Every structure is written in structure tokens, then in C-alpha cells.
Length: 348
Ligand code: ADP
Ligand code: MG
Image (tube, rainbow, N blue to C red; front, side, top):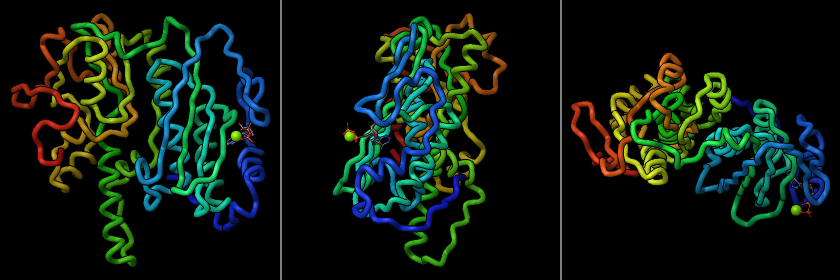
């Protein structure tokens, strides 16, 4: 995980907005020739030449999307970037630039915001992104982060949500549900800590789950892999809200149905053991948990030989005609309607 370095505390009201922006941005590196003008003017200037530009924005609001009592600021910065890059990759595009806008209450020190930025910069470095601007303002309601990501693609490579066709394979990257169970583990530790602050959390057996919650990675590698395999998905979406709701988005936009197989959904062993411990159905968690930032795509059957041996890609079902509806095929081969929220379990 990412460690915490800044221990001092400089009040933001003592330094002012411009010194804050300066402190945050003075050491930023520019990595791309396409960045003609970066921070320091009224707007940034970019040159995407013959490529199409792909743009996406997200908000992260304290108390709604994150809780700083178990989310260290450096992780939050990193995750805020991942959330946005994931949307660009879900278009089968390459992310190149971000802007970062912050609304900060006076509860935060300069050092705290620098800690947040160290996570943002780490993400920018690891994903080869230029941070080219943003906005900074005060807030009376905690911390709000809004990031806009820009990327590039050839028009013929861009993949939308509406291209799935009957008989296509439904394919997902990585494994699902871990980030949600990581949050459950952290929430439980927070309750234990409230009762007895001397209790040190023992997270050893949950490291993968906690890491998936605190330090998710956007699947830039999959965009490269698809290009290397010469596979262009017929549709794609990133999994931020849970597999079932994302698959239903694809089906609705593409005007198709689907059969999703419960026994094919990829799960990490730690997810399975922790769901048993918490007495939660692991399938429900993979369907509804969210924050996986994996990619869900549909792929033509003719591409099956190209993807079948790849450990990053799992076939979890088939696209059907619209009239077949959207179905979850359970382990006992019975079929239930796929819903955006659960399918009859108590935790829904
Ligand atoms: P303006 O008054 O035109 O909005 P600002 O003073 O807010 O300009 O910003 C000055 C420069 O600093 C601009 O290039 C802007 O993009 C950049 N900037 C402001 N806030 C941030 C931030 N949080 N992160 C990165 N760049 C920022
Ligand atoms: Mg401004």
C-alpha cells in the first residue's frame, strides 16, 4: 500500500489559493508531446492530431463516495484517477490527460492536500498521464474531487455500450467482488476501533480485498492486450456499480438479452472465504458489489480462439435475442431474471 509521509500541518487560510495551487503543481512532469500548454494559463492546449478525443468526468464526494476514516488521502488521490481512467479504457481508448478540481474545507491542511496529490501524481506516473489543469476552491462540506480524463483512439477502435449482438460471448477481466468485501472488512475494523481504540486491526488474511478497495487499478493493460490479440469487442463498459447493473446497461443499449452463468463468475479465494466468514452469498457480492474497475465486454464467437487461453479474460455467458430476456443461470441450472440489485438474497 501507499505510505503516509507528511506529518506537519499548515493551515490553508494562511497560505491562500494561489500558493496552494503552486505548491500542488510546481513539480508536475509533462510526459506527452501532445501537451502544448499545461498548467498556468486560462486553459490547457492539446494536440491529438488525427485521433478522436474521448472525454469523461467523475465526482468523488466525502461522505458519499469515500470515508477518510479508513481511506488514506494518498490512496484517495490514486483511486480518484483510476475511476476516471477506467472510463476511458472502457471506450477502448488510451488515456493521456487529466484535470483535477478540488473543493476543500478548512479542516484540511496543506500537507493533507499534498498527500492527496502524491497519490494523484503516482497514478499519473504509473499510467503515463499528464495533469494539465484544474480548479481549486474552498468548501464548507468536506472534500470534493472532480477529475476529467481525456484520451485518444482511432474512430474504428472505439467501442460503445450498444454494439452487443446475439450469440456474442460475455467476457470479464480479472475477478469481481473483492473491492466491496474490502470495504466491509474496513467498516468492521472501524466499528471495533470505536469500541476499543487500543485494538490494532489484523487485516493479514484480507490483504487482497483491502488492496482492491483502497488501491484499485484501471485496466490499461487490457486495451493493449485486445490490440495485441487483434480483438475488437462488440461492446464494452467498466464495472463500477456491479456486474449485473453493467451487463443490463449493455443489454438495454444493445437491445439484446443475455444468459449469465453464476458458476463462471471469477472470484478470488479470499473473496470466497471472507463471504463465508461474513455469512454473505459471494455471487450476490460479485453481481452487486461494485468498484471493481474491471472491464465487461462482449466478443464475437469467431474471436473465441484468440481469447480462450488468456488468464485475464473469462467467458461468463452469452448474448441472446432481446425477447429471451436477461437471465442468471444458477449453479443448479435453474434460471432467474437478472436484476440490477440482487436476486432474492437477504443482503440486497
Ligand atoms: P482561473 O482563475 O482561470 O480559473 P486558476 O487560478 O483557478 O485559474 O488556475 C490557474 C492555473 O492552475 C490553471 O492552469 C489551472 O488549470 C491550474 N489549476 C488550478 N487548480 C488546480 C488543481 N487543483 N490542480 C491542477 N491544476 C490546477
Ligand atoms: Mg480557477
